[in-house]
Amino acid sequence: MFEEQHAPVFVISVAAELADMHPQTLRQYDRMGLVTPKRQGGKQRRYSQRDVELLREVQRLSKDGVSLAGIKRVMELEHQVSALQSRVRELTQEVEQERMLRRDEQRVFAAGTRGDVIPSRRGARIRSSRAVVLWQPEQ
Image (cartoon, rainbow, N blue to C red; front, side, top):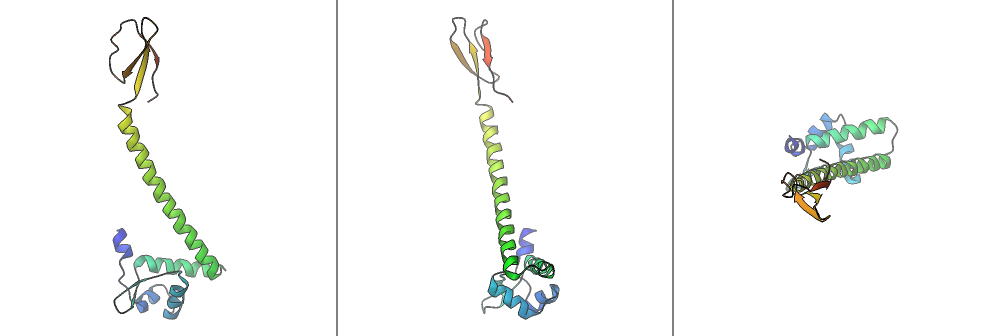
């Protein structure tokens, strides 16, 4: 799905029609860096479905009175937020994987009959019958 949305398939005239804009407007947005299509060998612009959606968003913001410089800033911030959300998802997965790996390694501590500390792995039976569990990590 992601690849389909980003596949550069539309020539400028088709993209302009889909976005209900003039092709010259698309060229201007490209020069400004608002919506930058992929280029074919002969420098022909090829727009993706995602590019067309961005063009519609630019048009909507423009109709709401936002300047082109403001639109560019909004789009940069949206891109930054999207990248940060993606990074948060990656880090959350890493933390969860680390928790799963370490869950079996967590230790339980017990006091021996002479007051000594007896480390043990979670789920392992403590050999001394008089040992008292002092601390066990939360699950």
